[in-house]
Image (cartoon, helix red, strand yellow):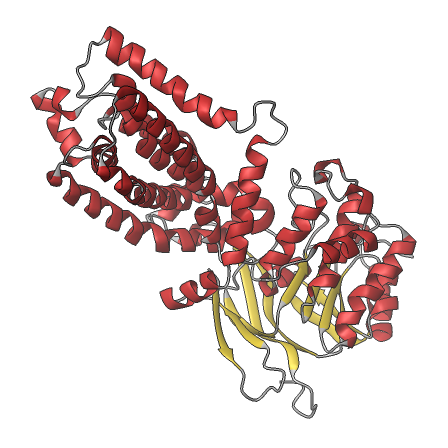
Length: 257
Length: 285
């Protein structure tokens, strides 16, 4: 453990985490174990990853496409299982794992917020939901099915709900891609309150300025391995340098400010 | 679900829940504890299911009354009028008393089978005990069964003057079709993650099951060489128990053993199989 000299407990302790995927389609023969599982090509998404996050830390996570950022967050959110290794979490996890934030199209914003809270074992009062709606600036649309929401409204409601559920560890993966600049800083400040109250946040984004403004520490993943772990300024400088010197096809999806 | 073990942390003053994520399976006790924490979620998903079902329809809940009545009408015309099947009761009452438990079994199996894929928006984005999904998908079939029971009561009052005391046991008799349907659905849900054919095969299988179960016809109308189908069919007992309680007959005890065996087998295979599939389905959905 990297934090033994520290008095705070780690909120998250990742030890030798490894995840491999098999390429291709699962087959009936594979299911019945008639064919050897080695027949399908393997991809290593996470390769013996270890790190710890302490209470009060907001940690950025950068890396090119396919570096394992999303896989890591999915394992921590308990959506997918690691192949080996372990991760120890302290407290509840709040996950904003993609643009749609786990909302159901046919349900209204109010019902979706209730559902999201119930998954975390919480019940929202009417006032809670009104507050979430006001924060997400969708108060007029709370009783409208979310299929009629814009992408920005989806994400704002996701962020507002996550800020309200008071999880100890927030996992945020590109959840700000469709919101405007004003809400972006407002929403991030709301999420940061979790961190200030002894929680922690892992923030994944290709918008490097977002990471720069909201985290003090940053991890750079490359091909499932930890390339660099340090202060955000230091890591982002190295990562930007890497992006400048590497081939253009490695750079897709990277948005420089 | 995921290999997660929780224990209360005595060193930490804040006593936060500690979760350990690692590969490997979990104990049944762990799953039960996780499920016990999720009753609020089950209730909410059930309500959501019922709300969504008839939202934006003009007739709304009336569909839940029209649908079984039309099936009874079809049965009555095909079997009662054309087939001249003799039943102990008025044919509509007789077939409705079979349709309620069979409809419950069939709908629960269908909805459980698709519960992982139809809730992909949740399964691929957030953690919760996955068994919540099959459980909450029973809401709509149960409501249909309740409406069916009310219809039956009305039909029984019209066609006969007194009601048998055993009518009180009818809700209890619905436990068997519910358990059978869930078991069948769990196996199908687990299979359908890798073998997509199951999605097409299940409705076919359920239609064959309807044919082989005394729903539209009484079991004594079955020719002797086919009688074994009815006797060995676990759904027969589910229908028989319910119908006997509604009509005040005595149930056929020889049907109970195959039904119990099938239920236990389906759950014993389906439950671990479903959890394994649910664990990997976020990677394949």
